Image (cartoon, rainbow, N blue to C red; front, side):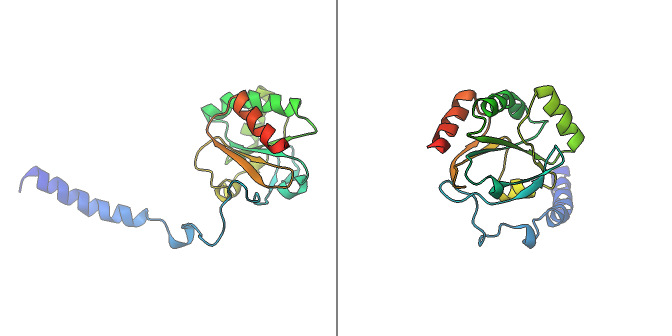
Amino acid sequence: MNRWHILLILLIVLGIPWIWMNRVPVAAQTDFTTPQPAVNHPAPDFTLPTLEGGEFQLSAQQGTPIVLNFWATWCGPCQNEMPALQQASERFQGRVQIIGVDQGEEAAVVQRFADEMGVTFPIPLDSEFAVGERYSVRGLPTTYFIDRNGVIRHLWVGEMNSITLAEGITEILR
């Protein structure tokens, strides 16, 4: 038997158990009965602890437009857009609430980053990725623009500049 046959047999013998062990369990597969967040549909409610030690509940913000940004400190595009989010938070204070949902990091790491970047808007901590999963976050950053009635009006996946952010905010202020 030549070495290619041996290599092929070895790949099959090792590959089948690897595939079996790494398959997605039935319970973790998408639940098609639960509606996923979508533009022009209500934003799913959630409650998370905040970096400041309090609690953030989305439904408690009813009546205020929300920019809901999913991010992490290690994410380069998230780092790049953070100054624009902070500026928008200051510029639209009292009219729009910027919320930065951190994905899966320890509070101390997030606090250090927030201090370095001068971030003052609320940062809920999604340590178990439950809210990110509920919002179908597949990449960071991901931003939902939610109007004062709790309806998602716009979704942006990837890094935003200040112009893109302003356009999304304008849409939810209508």
